[in-house]
Image 1 (cartoon, rainbow, N blue to C red):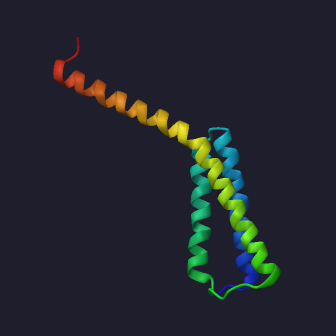
Image 2: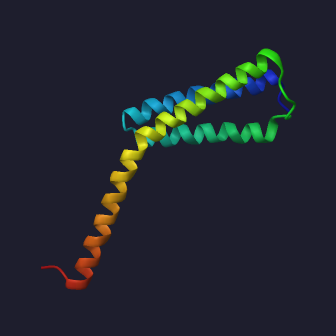
Length: 109
């Protein structure tokens, strides 16, 4: 089981990873974004398995709250950056599907 300092270290690592994810999203580096997200998910799994669940108090609790807020802010930035790309990707997929249906229905000209 992890003590409070170890738990905070994992949260700090996750906060750093989410900041790197923001930078990757700003560069439209989707492959890097996915890799960073997977690394972050691995840390979440570690916390699920190893955190004792004992409530933190005082400065440790404040630090944990600060790190969670940083991650939530980064998540919001990532969503703001990825949503237009996702919408564009969705349009491309729909257009390709429509084109395929027209070709199937009428054949190539």
